[in-house]
Image (cartoon, rainbow, N blue to C red; front, top):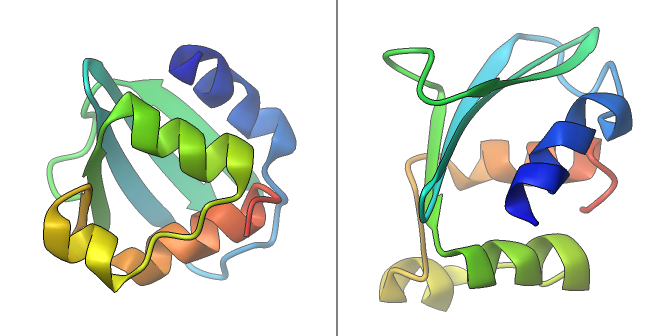
Length: 102
């Protein structure tokens, strides 16, 4: 399910969602993906393809699917409890909005 979502991101992400290029590394249980967003759209690559991504997001498949499919908005308690970990939650918000999920 997570693999399918990431395979559809390049077609569903709105170009122009960010003026500067942004890289996001996702670690969702066993799924590892790098997303590169720019003014021309999104590109998804398998694994960690960039050493220092602008944003790193680690979470479980269950939590990711809740955010993606049910529109759940992670709050402070989710970050504090470790349900989701990120060094830049604002970039995650921009990513979700670009994909029509924010």
